[in-house]
Length: 402
Image (spheres, one colour):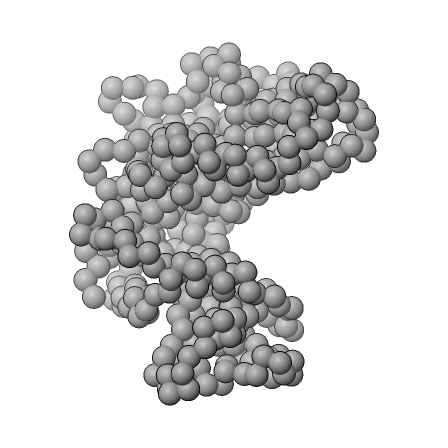
């Protein structure tokens, strides 16, 4: 299978560099996941946007106005320590978005950015309802969103109303997936909410110096030297992509798989292993195959995994933004998983067997020290394929995550 130029690992191509016409700004080219969630048209529609909804209880009386002020101070702290949260994406004629950071010219500009990133609402509207509203507006606006926006909702008469201790609040955070993966989004929200209880109001920041805190490009952060990647890496990339292209599923089938997974954890295995096994059995239950097909049909499940384990010590915990490697599980010999779904013992036995297959596959891929650059190459390949004028969508998809 031809993989265009995705086998080439070129760290220099993805490094931060100054922009000639804007002395204070730096930018780099998107890499890996950033490219397929950063396809221009899809990103403008919010196709890959993600949200976190958090229910909280107040520990002290406060108003939405005072809470916003604390969140603003917390965002300023986060921006100085992790300026990636204030990046913007631009598109040119080359493949992949340009991810750009421009420091604020003064503290007032930084405060304005933080204020615009927090919206408080005195409303009976719930977070899930607001999320649907945001998704609908994103599709209508048809332009790339900011990196993140924090919404705070409380069922009070107005934003100056004192909210009693023990009252419920909802935090809904909207993320543009170009700049985040699920792990960094959760870490960011945890840091931000922790800062609400800290004295950050009088903190001083030397804006411009925070550029030094930008997350290092992934290829410069690897434990493995990208320049030493050879035949094993190239063969593994070919293997991974070849497996993924064996077949595809319709989008509706994928949704049935995801919704049908109900499982419990087995000894010595992670919930991911069990989730994969349960997905397999759900697929076979919802879309049963003819008996003769069990001899020559396979089920292939590719999905992202946390790639921070492949970063050098000291960099993984600080890495904001996307850092996704990849794994793929192949289930052959489907006959052993074709069980009577009324037989609980048979289901448990099939789940156990499927978990063993899953763990073996994960061990196979996760043991490769070059899995993160391999994942970047795979994502770059698929991004180029999706962006290509020769690629015509046919309404099919694969279950890339649970």
